[in-house]
Amino acid sequence: MTAYDDLMAFERQTQALGQVAGRLGWDQETVMPRGAGPQRAEETEALEHVLHERRTDPRVGDWLDDIDTTALDAIGQANLRQIRRRYIRTKRVPIKLAGEIARVTSSAQGIWADARANNDFTMFRPILETVVALKQAEAQALADGGDPYDALLDDYEPGATSAQLEAMFDALRPRLVSLRDRIMGAAHQPAPLVGTFSENAQMKLTREIAKAFGYDMAHGRIDKAVHPFSSGSGLDVRITTRTNAADPFGSIYSTVHEVGHACYEQNIDREHLLTPLGAGVSMGVHESQSRIFENQLGRSRAFTGWLFARMGETFGPLSTPDAEAFYGAVNRVTPGFIRTESDEVQYNLHVLLRFDLERDMIAGRLAVADLEEAWNTRFEKDFGVAVDQPSHGCLQDVHWSVGLFGYFPTYSLGNVYAGCLMKALRAEVPEVDDHLAAGEPGKVTRWLAENLQRHGGLYEPREVITRACGGEAPSEVPLLEYLEEKFGGIYRL
Image (cartoon, rainbow, N blue to C red; front, side, top):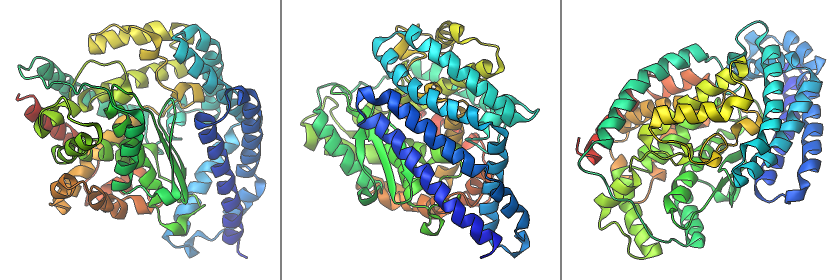
């Protein structure tokens, strides 16, 4: 066997163990007994030790040195690029620190859930202080003299910097704020959907919609969790959702969002299975798929017309009198607290708040003890509403409890990418609205599968978006134009 063959055989086992680690996380969020938390933390730490040792095994470095890269095709080159990047990054983090982060964040997840349920930030504060300290240590190790926050960001969006994202977000903010203010002051305000909606019926409907968007239930499943998420890749890709009898949109659209993530993973070429290319290339690209599924497709006038009729069949007559009123109800802009339930206009403002606060925590400019007050002050400034309880404020997201610092900005980056992709999709698939109106979004999402999803990690993040968009580099302009046109119509601006 060649050095490349040896490396890829070793890598396949490492990837398989990584999938096992992900399955432990899925189990913890869905069906694990509440009392199993302490043991699960040790199990997670033990597996992280094994993974860290494999990812820093000296043989990996030797194989990388021995491989004649000129003899490799594009796939081989991409595999080496991904393995080398991870090898260098992982070696910078001491194994003891990596294991401690895995153990603490596993425990912190349960503590966060209890604190959220009890609306008590003080319950979460001590463990979050520990998590932040560990992530600061990891960031310093990864940065190797560079910017610590950028070092964490690189885990989720390779090649991106906080300075680049800040410039993009600065371009988004003024037009988003202006659009929101005009919407809030509009004479026409769509009425909300009201009523009581069976949670069992919601789950049945979400499964139907998931399959319509292209989710392969033979290689997946849908369960409930406190915070919806997608897990796995290749032949086993699972999603979760949540239900609320008073709000069926929360279940429907969190499901469509996670289906976007899941379809990305399911549609990657099988030749990449259990290799570094067998997963989404970045969280920004991943979010582009979940956001385009949820918003540009799922909240479109065409698809909501079909959904209006289907929900009437499922739940009986709705409070919205017709499909156009229902379309307005789906896309209402309201000053809500929850990021995952936010409308398209304000969603990015929620992300920008988190981006700024977590950068300050990693830099040591914001102490965890001051986080709740800082969050509430910033939220009222940005949204004009005072936070009424911690579960509507700094306890609403799971991310910091599990150490995902650097993750939040990829949500807005994903929105930007989605705007670019939708522009390209409409240009190449002019019958988009016909398919959506017929309740057949899978005929639309096939374009994404072919032009982006199948590549997995073959190309770098910005490159795969640029290629899918016919050579047009990512820009925030298509997103802003889409939002202004859509909501200008809904609110008759």
